[in-house]
Image 1 (cartoon, rainbow, N blue to C red):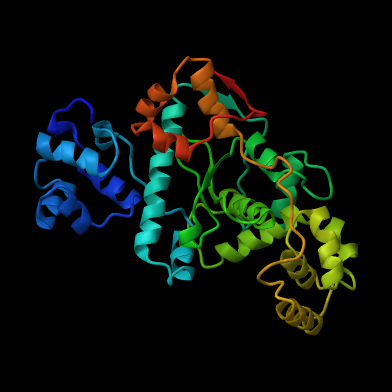
Image 2: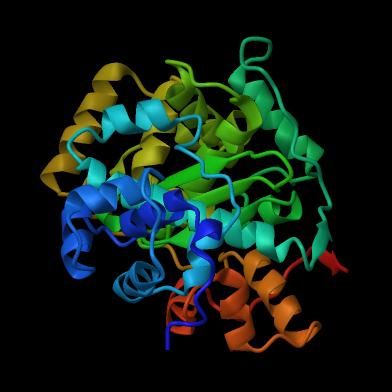
Length: 359
């Protein structure tokens, strides 16, 4: 059953297009599925032609979602502040792939907003903001570590640190897009980081630190923002005062030894050594040639274990709704305006959080 037919006047045409993009379906393909011309579907999506009840039923079936999905009142968002550099660097990736990812991001943002109608949380720490035009990037990273009372040396669990500051981390499948992560700081919502769950743990941690840099430093796009986020991640994960002496006379073997201690990639450790002038440009070039010969640039020999470093806050919000408010899984799916199998696919239902949830 597809659910009760709602008055067509309550349908938001842009939600039809959003769902279509989320499923990676072209306008021509969807038009064929619901037995209308592409021109008719285009006019429906643009709000130029009313959708009939019969067409609504067909759209619901073809797009595998309840009719309620097309009535979601959510504002739709484009890419994050780093969207321009992201699209430029990923020019080889089809726009259809990126549009599909951003459509899913919009749906997940709507779900977070829904959950916040039921629960609230109190972060232990605030997320500060620093303008990189006023402060050196390295100092900004140091200040964030101080504000969050992080000890010197490696950050053993960066997920825990970010969630304590109220950042919601959402695992996604971004493999086809080639992206590592996206971050949003939207009005009335906690900071959000969408991260590719399929990347190695060292890359996963770097992505979180990189996106944290965007959240802390960037309210508008700039040509230098990606380099600034990289520099922030380097100092946040490997403070110069702590790692500097360890990078002297660095080589591949030493980088492999330091990797599990700092929980960063060998490549990032070597990058850090060069930026801190622990090695010369010539030494760096020679080491990278050796990395290429050994194929370590593609597949590093030392793998990091997860060690419990996975997001829990979003799952804890969902569990609160289920356990404390007695919503069963079907009711939760109804709240999300999706069918239950898709909700199960998108979200795990277990987890613990260090943030206190309140009514």
